[in-house]
Length: 88
Image (cartoon, rainbow, N blue to C red; front, top):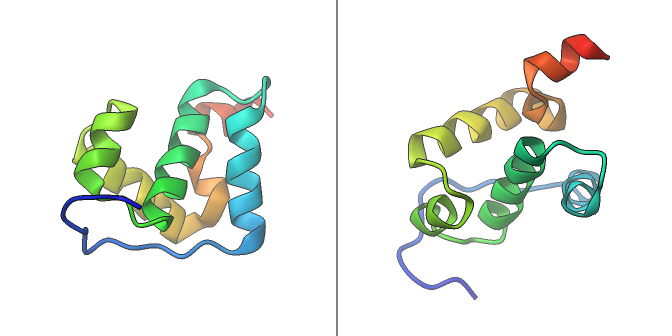
């Protein structure tokens, strides 16, 4: 269980979203930044405080908010870097 202050920012993942994000953590073909974004969302969905997530993944809280907002707006597709979207 996560310790520390809870964040007001919470997300709920569907089973499919959770499975996709977990698969990114073990993939050899997913770029590291995308896997890190998936990890952020998994940790946040599990209730870990934002400040601990930021320290764990080496990002600022502002950067984390950016990716969470993209996920909330576009779903898992929002976590794909725009450069990756155009190369497909």
